[in-house]
Length: 403
Ligand code: NAD
Image (cartoon, rainbow, N blue to C red; front, side, top):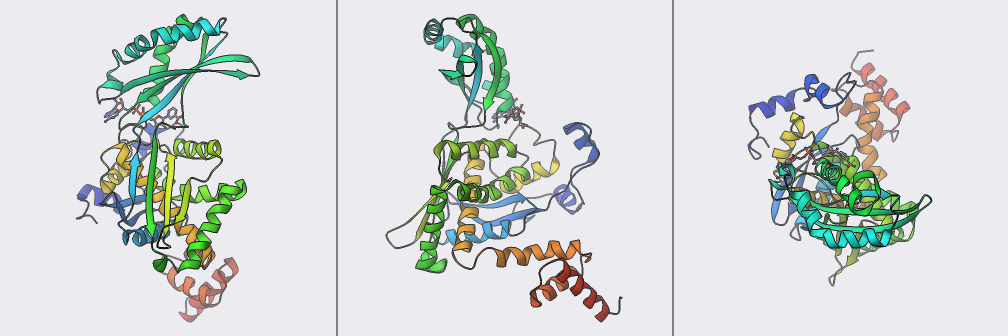
């Protein structure tokens, strides 16, 4: 992988270290830092998105996520991989105006001065415009709340390759006095919305029925998905499965995964729908699609401060936030498909518990060299649990004369 992804000696040294984030860097990144916190860093393989092959870094502790994503991507490869799209990096920033005396007059003034406000927002704003970004539109809504009417002015901001929260929030704070003057209101909140409906990523893929266990498995996937569309309790878990993959990529690439999570789940709630859709094509194959807001960046935030995140960016090789979002959408679809397929056939526990067995063996005290043997013994004895691990470890050590 070092050769294929052009990793240099410093990257390899980082990967070989226990904990690639230096304490001094961590101390600069947050407050009251007492150490660093590790997660397994893996790579998902076989991802072909818009004809380009990707090695996808994933930071996650949950077993079987990486294997499932890689497997679903491999099966999709047989039909050409994932076709993905991106609407552009437009974030919505909101300024809340309260105590507006004449709403109609305020709205008229905003309409009349719309282009002036946009021009002002983009002037002297190199942080926003230097890379081709800037405010592209202005819109407003009056909302009725328990504390009366409020005027919400929304800036649509092209943040190009950044996640964009700081870029948007800075713009809103700069513009609030102008809006106060124009509307006669008092500005309170000036903050971006994580419901990034102007920054949508989508991906589609086809899985051949013969590759996934036949027509009944395909029908089972449709039944599973239809339940998620109809029932919010199932939908929550369905969408969590999507985010298993997307979050792991966001963490590895130093992105704000809370923002990604907030956007995805609020979009699902807004639509009252699952983040993925499935149907059978004319040949009885499963065609899957994912559509969700994805506010992720390849620049900004703490990305460069964390050397592991910077290296993961190089491993993935996504040059723009749009390219990154499309790969993440493909990962979310693959992850969700893998879970539905497992549940529609053998169930997820067999595969999951086989991998989880390693955690159990380690918790029972197995050393790194003992783990494989303990797992083998637990599996053979059909006792993948703490007692099974302790028994297996005991027997194994006795046999080797260690106890
Ligand atoms: P940022 O403040 O680092 O801004 C990005 C910088 O990158 C800008 O200065 C920009 O000029 C520069 N840049 C260089 N090349 C660029 C390119 N090609 N495209 C765009 N910009 C380019 O980071 P940000 O992305 O504005 O904000 C992200 C951070 O904000 C994250 O750390 C996030 O956790 C945090 N945050 C999130 C929320 C929220 O989600 N609700 C709220 C506040 C802050």
